[in-house]
Image (cartoon, rainbow, N blue to C red; front, side, top):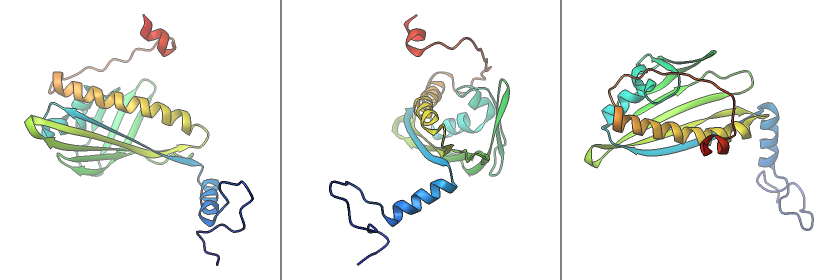
Length: 193
């Protein structure tokens, strides 16, 4: 007997997958929504208390010590997060504010389907340490999603590592972000010098 979870016709000999009602629904959804969903999860142990980690993640001065650009944060549910970089500003809204354990900020959805959410989970551990977990999720435009997702899988761990190093060596200090741009160089050549 036919059901929505079964194939709509007999499988061809040698075929590994026949089309199904769920596959048709997914195909139709992707035709209407050209964005691809992404998720990157990064965990790092930091030598800091949850309160110290919260301060570094949820204040502009703290964020300037480990993230890019210059940041301003309105510390409340519904508050704005603004990060200024040369030539543009990234803006998002705080959608979860649970001091000192959970902080989420979400970008507005762009016409091409792009949407980003950054969730920081902060868990105190023994010995004055804290587990930092970043869950970076959202949607990327269909035409570039693979390249950008690959870049996020490389970049997000670097930012969480920088956050842990900031907490270990520089917590509470005020940073002055500097942006320097130069010619693009292949990574192997840049690190060989």
